[in-house]
Length: 182
Image (tube, rainbow, N blue to C red):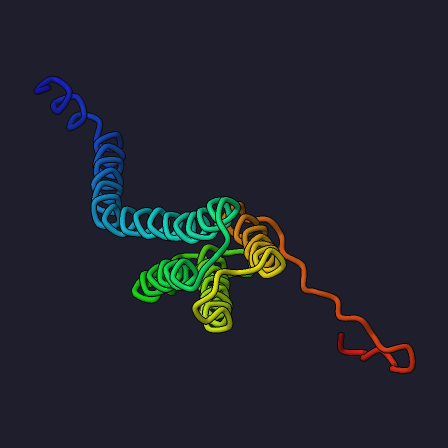
């Protein structure tokens, strides 16, 4: 090492380059050291957000799958509603807007959509439980509940996979003129 230092000192232009390279390496190490915790936090938030999406999907999928084996009754509907509510509460505590990407197909947007889907499903299940009173659902009511939950399951699957979602196209009355802003 001593011979290398002597040689660099004898060639003063090379010594300047060696100092420059050393300074750049020191800056690079400082940069990586300073930003490593930030990058780790972003990765942890992304992983936690993805897990929350999965929990939302699993709650809907679990109820849809198990409800095929029994006719819903008020307590089962309220329990499913409580499950949805618990996940929505977890999503409410998650710092969605600390996620890096906030675009149209971002994890943040999909989490908000999953929370809204679960909240709507909770409202539907609570209303269905109220409508049943103390009775068990008829086969027609059972099918209506499973169909509604199944449609939310398809939406949840699209949210978890990141599939492109399309806005619904509402039917236009035959005598109505289409809106130019649509």
